[in-house]
Structure formats: structure tokens, C-alpha cells
Length: 176
Image (cartoon, rainbow, N blue to C red; front, top):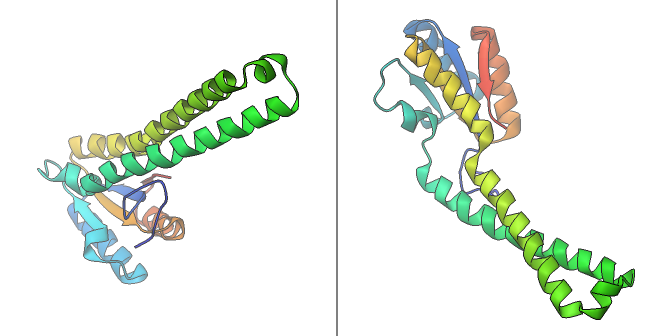
């Protein structure tokens, strides 16, 4: 398990390959497990009309809540700190408004910088990189195709998985 400051998920990176048959999907999944020594829980085959497709694509619902808390906390704090640095720079430059109303200026700058950090926390929580991954797999499932979904524990593992899946299928979708 890797430890991530901003996210609470065990697997931040996902890789999916869309295949035309169940046999090809099962073979690709088996190859990934054997070659990279991955656990069964990391490699899933998703079939058309699978009632658990959503859970197989994004299995860490509790991790998403933890991601929300961590991302907002750390990025809000970072935004406030950067706001304090900005106030310090403006104070050093002797900007008249800043010098004459230091408390109000510091409060406003730090507040708005913290809000900007919280907005970035929301962006991290939304995981926009996962939208394309989910939509492409769901479209393929709707067409009667199969998907092999791998929950990589590191970026290096994600890269290895993507290379192996490209040899089994031309359609590989990855998240960041």
C-alpha cells in the first residue's frame, strides 16, 4: 500500500483495456496477474451487463471520502500559507493599501488564497481523469465488449500494466 498525502485511496491509478471476447479478457487478466505478480483484487474482468461494473471500476468508495477530507485540508492549508507569503511580499514592497490596512489586507489575501486551495481540493476530489476511463469502459460494455480493469499501486506499475495490455488490445485507457 502506498501512502498519498492528498488522497485516501490505495490505488490512485487505473488502467483498463477493452477486448472483444470473454476469453481474450480472461487471458489478458491472467497474463497481467502472472507477469506482474498482482493480487486478484487488483485485476478485474468486467463483462457486459455486469451488475457490479461500477464497483469493479471504482472499488474504493470509502477512500473517496478520505480523499475529499485530505485534499481539502492540505490544499486549503497550502492556499492559506501561500496567501501569507503573498501578503509578506506585498508588505515588503510597501504597497500603500497593504501597509495602511495590514490586518484587513492580510485577512482578505489569506482568506481568498485558502478558498482557492479549497477549490483545488474539490478538483482533486472530483478526479476528472477518472471520467474518461469510466465513460469509455461503460460505452464498451454497452456495445457487448469486455474490459480488463487493473488498479495499479504506483505510476510505475500503471506503466507496466498499460504496456502489457496494449499488446492484448489496441484500446487502453489510463488515469493519472
